[in-house]
Amino acid sequence: MKKINIILFFTIALLTIGCETYDDYQPRKTTIGFVPSTRNINGVPNNSYKSIDVEIFINDVSDQERTFNIISIPAVFDPTVSPQIESAPENYTFDSSVTISANSRNGVITVSGTNVSLGDDDEYFSLAVEGSDNVVSGSPITVRLRH
Image (cartoon, rainbow, N blue to C red; front, side):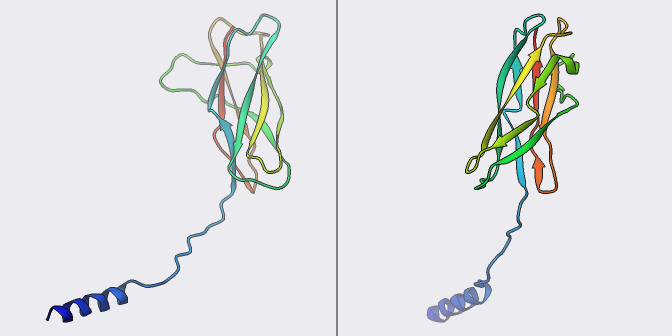
């Protein structure tokens, strides 16, 4: 009787466990964004500028060099911090594009705070990588400027 139960168990197990393939492959679009999502430019001198390098990461590798546009977007504010002031466009500059080298996942742009009309309070601006039909814009970056 025990042998019949074991044979019955294995027979049912073989019938219910199939050898099907499970193809859940969906081609995903390339995603590119900033790492990290916040940066500071402290001590921007009067009528001058101060620069930082900002890293950009892409989720796939290509055997060709790729170039992406960088755009300014409305400042992305942290809801736990107040008050926050959006900086005027004359108070910052940034590289308008980033080039990701072949066989690489990283790129770097230079972002500068220019003290044309900075007030005494911290000011913020945000940048993003421009998306397209084949590219998803990942996380933007919010930069804090301090006089």
